[in-house]
Length: 78
View 1: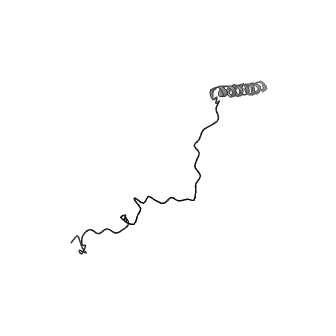
View 2: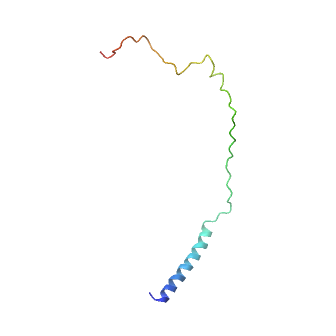
View 3: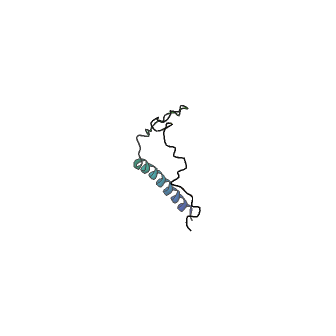
């Protein structure tokens, strides 16, 4: 390569860089850089008691073992 070719490549790269800088500024223009977000309520150590309508001493315990009928047959598939 000759010295003229290297100088021409440097000039083309410089002009292209300046042109792309200004064109990108026109294309990707953003006037408002503020974004509104929801604020989160702080976490507290207070615990509200559950509703007495559902959680009381007369409620059904879903963790109890349920038996249907008398299961005296130890080998049901014989």
